[in-house]
Image (cartoon, rainbow, N blue to C red; front, side, top):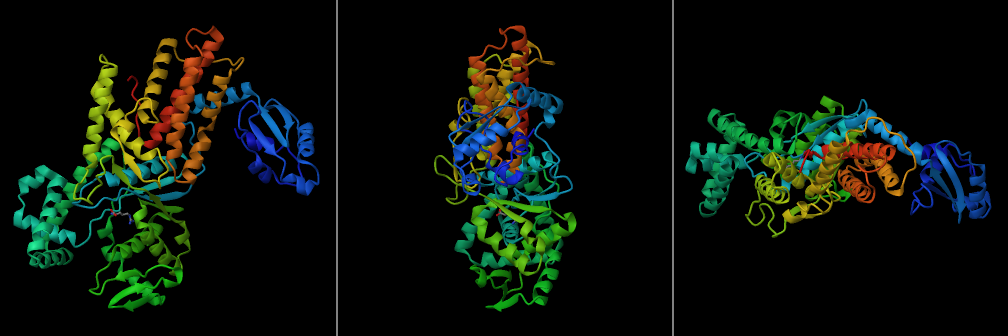
Length: 560
Ligand code: ARG
């Protein structure tokens, strides 16, 4: 229930609308003062009275009811206190009624949102640099679905470009089918690296690569078959990781999918007088917008990354009639997105305003290594594997007799990798540290998972709550209720700002507040009525923590 709305509807002040009052209602610095506060300083001007007097008048006129139990005026603020029992009953009944749906809504009903994420490149390593786009995009996908939208997950595969000519040339010279079958992506990448080394000594190789690429374009049977095989091998390898991370896509339409969809774009640009020739290339001049030109066709007539993105956006609009189209791509590509969004706007596509670049920062490892830069590739698969292995070590040490350790370590280790990438504001560069993401006492998924295991064990011993009565509510219980009640609002904000980190932080907060309650208040040894209520709080916490982690793509083991 929206208490702010309830309060705002019952206040008349200085001719302000309910919406204005709603936005003015704030959270007091501590709950001793109240649960919501209305600062009256802004009203002093229009009402021509001292804030303290206005606050007093509003407080006197406010009709308390079963929801708002107390109103007081303090130093120019009106403080409102929500009835604890009402709040607790409301929150817990909603959680128990909705359970794994608690927090969901239908606010996105009828709205389709395309989400372009992960978008890996064929025959290139799936490295730590892809972690953020993959888990951010996947979480945004789940979140949109939970809030009633129709998400379309798109893996805009990097499956077009001269590099495939290089790969064919390298394969024909040094590759062996069995090695590639066995080695997958890594073997392909090794071929690619070798090509570059050899081409440095023998630049003629580059011509050979170009001619192979041309062969793909001309649909030469052998070259196309090799390319398709590389693609298949790549998808087989990355799918293993997607499965581990619980990541899914509805469309795998990559760059090559738009091969036959760019000519109409070029024609339209020309028709609209947007195309200009510059040094043989066809460009859209963006100088007026403070940007370098967007190159549409190279001087040899070849299309570019941007050309494909323009065609893809138009295709997506036609196919899905999206409400929004999100691109979860690193901030290094800021300019690219600004440019092609602008080109679409100049083409008169009014929906260009619905394209959103959801930019995020870089991930590096503690030892300073980062993807391909130093030629040192950190494969995402290796990071996950190492995390799972370390998780197994920690779990075995903490709880040697635990059954099913391997499966639990997998859930914990994979969760730690995901959570590590989602805990901070997405735009921040992060340094990935195994010790940090696997710290059971830190701001981590394992801390949250561990709290779930604790709640599970309380419920196992105490029996599930079923019905509950609410009597006096202590501070720890009340803090817990407030956080539990917050969840739907947090999800709404997370979606609005495209910040799954709000959910991650929320999960840690809730776990902390629950643990405080767990240590301060006895649950199983409390007297009957209190015991029932505390068990209900425990079960509600478990439900909400599971929902929160689930939206991040993280599972919850029963025991740890
Ligand atoms: N494959 C690209 C890369 O690795 C990312 C593609 C992002 N999506 C897009 N529509 N441009 O940089």
